[in-house]
Every structure is written in structure tokens, then in C-alpha cells.
Image (cartoon, rainbow, N blue to C red):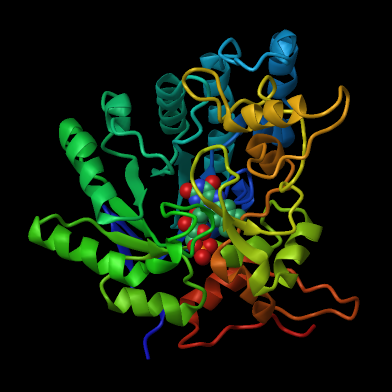
Length: 418
Ligand SMILES: Cc1cc2nc3c(=O)[nH]c(=O)nc-3n(C[C@H](O)[C@H](O)[C@H](O)COP(=O)(O)O)c2cc1C
């Protein structure tokens, strides 16, 4: 029986262990986690989502406080178009976050940035341009374009000196999305993606499927459909399936079927290097299957998978767009801010609303209150030991990575007893 270590991922001149740890914003896949994956010979992702607050936490800068001070006068206004991001400061924060990560990188693996394009930041095109270009300036090895693919992202960076050096990949959930991207984007800029992550319906984070119909789709089927089409078009682009690949055996099966690597994430949420607070990691361990739900609370408009009991659901926090504002669309509106105003208007003055149909993703992701996870989060308890105090033992990135790399079949390597 084969294991992941029997395969290698070739990306340009790099030969890698074919394990990619996907981006987990906001700072759930920390710099430390990504650097450790690279040391082990795979590809680790950091995310640039809410980069100002991440940088404030890591480097004691005060981007968020300064932004709030500047726009506080607008808090009561539903139109947030005045609260524009300062592009110079965005570039500075991105360079700080990415640059320090790349400096810490050791070993033969790579560190990529997950760029959620659906963070429209009150000015989708210009903020995206700055995010991509400053990550390239700061030496990132690769960029994975995610959620809400912009159809001309490559054009925003095609005159950057590192355009042909940085590995560029995309996440798609259907052949149609891939075809659209290639037609509008890659061919126009004369550059194809270096890899394609095919994300199925069991993944964590935002999903490229409907809230009601995700269960009708299956990763292996979508992968074969894309594989066949690329073959017919004579396009040789490595495919990386993602979503619900829980064991080394699951991963090896995809590699045997021609995948170049696998992208995984949920198993790493319970590692010490993961950015979630320890009590949240325990909630992930304890989760049962009926607590893992797909809903439509994200103001991005995409369905998202999360744990039902997380504090982000039913919270009535005041919208924080003047401090954060990452989900403001091109006209300065956020679906959560609108839902909040609607509910507040129904209540007597001073009473706090409870919002169930949308969540303030900025505030709750920033505070680790939105517990997004893959479908198999309920199996995390199978991957560790329970201590005498009832808590589960946190794992190391190295342990989980090696379990994926060397385990066969249904095997899951538990941490040692001592
Ligand atoms: C906690 C968490 C946060 C995530 N955040 C993001 C994100 O910010 N951007 C993104 O493209 N994917 C995100 N994902 C999806 C992962 O990168 C990955 O593709 C997917 O979860 C893999 O499936 P698995 O979790 O079943 O292994 C997230 C997943 C998890 C579990």
C-alpha cells in the first residue's frame, strides 16, 4: 500500500513533499505554522486576511487604532464609502507580515500566501493590487488566489519583476470556474497558473457550493472532470485536491489517481502552532458531527462551514467597519452592517439586537469567535489522546505532517503517551 512519501510534487525547480497546508485566516495558519511546514519539506500558507490587526498583534503596530481614530466620525453612518484604506499603510503592513515570515523560513519547503479576493476592502481592485504586489516585494514564494476570484488578478501584477518567479495558483470548486478564470485571466496575461487547488464541498472556510446543495457534490468526481478537460486541452497544470482529506491513506489515494499534491487544513487546527486559542482548539476536538454546519452568515455571500456553538452566531456586535472594514464592497456597504441596522430599528432605543442571518466576520474572525472548520472536524478527537483533566493533548505540526506523510490506509498516528 502506498503512502504520501512515495510521491513528490514538482513545482518548477522545487521538489516537495506533496502536502500543502491551506491558508486559514485570520492568523489561524500562523507564520510559525507555515514556516514549520516548509521546514518539513511541504508548502505552508499564511493568509493576508485582516493584515493590519495581525501585524498589530505580532509587532505592536497600531494600524487598527489609527484607522478607527481617523474614521470614528462615520460610525453611525450606514454608507462606509468614506472609510477608505490607506494603500501605503496596507503595503507596509503586508510587507511586515510576509517579510518577517520569509526571513524565518528554513529548509527545502515553500511558504505561500492565501489571498481571499472576496475581502473587497472598500476598493476591490486597488487594494488587491497592493496586497499582491507588496507580498511579492516581501519575497513570498507563491500566492494562492482564493474565494471570489477576480477575473483580472494576473493583470494587476504582470509588470511586477517577480511575475514569472512567484508561483501563482488558484482555488476553484468546478470546471466552469476554472474555464472562466483561464479564459478571462491567465491567457490575457500570457501566464497560466502554476497549480490549481480543487476544493470540494467538505472543506473549511468559505465554500464554492450552495448552502443547500453542497452534499450533492464530490471532490473525486470534480477532480476527474478537471483532469480530463486539462488533458483534452493539452494543459499540464498540477492539480491539488482539498476538502475532507483526513488521513495519510485518503491523501495517498488522490496521489495515486494523478493529483500532484493534497491541500489539508482542519487536522492542523489542533496543533500548538495554530493561532486559535487553546480553549477553541478543545472545542474543535470535542465537536460532534451534528455541530458542524454550513450556513450563509458570512457577509461575503458565500456559504461557510463552522461549529454551531461558536460565539459568532447570534451575536449583536456593532459593525466595526471604521476599524476593520475588510468586507465593504466597492460602494462602501457590508451585508452585516445592513442586517444590524435592520434589527436595531425594530427595538427600543438602547436595546442590543441579536443577528442570526449574518455575522460580523471581521470582528469575529479577529477574535477567534467564528469557528470555521472542515466537515471532518468531528473526527479530530480520533487524532489525539485525552488527558486526565478531560482535555485533549495538543499536537505538533511535525506530528500531523508526518502522520499524513507516512501513515497508510485508515491509520492515524497518535502522539506518544509520555
Ligand atoms: C479554520 C479554517 C480556516 C480557513 N480559512 C481559509 C481562508 O482564509 N482562505 C481560504 O482560501 N481557505 C480557508 N480554509 C480552507 C483551507 O485552506 C483548506 O483548503 C480546506 O479546509 C481543506 O480541507 P480540510 O480542512 O478538510 O483539510 C480554511 C479552513 C479552515 C479549517
